[in-house]
Image (cartoon, rainbow, N blue to C red; front, side, top):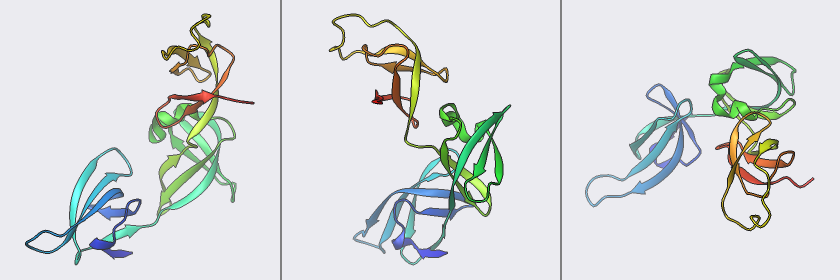
Length: 188
C-alpha cells in the first residue's frame, strides 16, 4: 500500500530500496527555504543496518503489512528449530542463525510470534521475559545481601548471567530475552 512521506509513523514497516525496514523515529521538519519533509530513522528487519532518510510530503513509499501468527516451539533438530502453527498445526523449520541469540531461551511448548511477508518468515519474537533455573552460582555469603554488587551464575541453558549475591543454585529467576539480563527472582 502506497503512503505519502508525511504519513509515515514509528512502527510502520516500509519496503525501501528492495529491503524491509521498520520505522524507529520520525520528525516532521519545515525549513525556512524549500518544502517540508519527514526525517525518518529506520532499521532493517533482517540484520541490524540503520539509516536516516528524508521523505518529501509528495513522495510515496510502499507500506508493508506483515502476517504475525503464534507458533509453538516443538524441538531442536541439529542446527534448526521446529515450530508449529497454533491454528493449522503446520510445522515450519527455521535455522538457529535466523533466530539469533534468542534461541538459547526457547523452551519446549513456548509460544512465539512469527512475522512473515508473502509467506516467508521474517522475524521470530519471543516473550519479553522467561523463567529459568540457576544451576551454578557462588555460595551466599552472610551480610552481602544488601550489597549492590552482582556475581556470575549459570542458567539451565548454559548461559552465564550476573545475579545479585543472595541468588543461589536451584533458584528460579526471570531473565530478559532481549539482552539476557537478570530481572528478578521468580515468585512461585
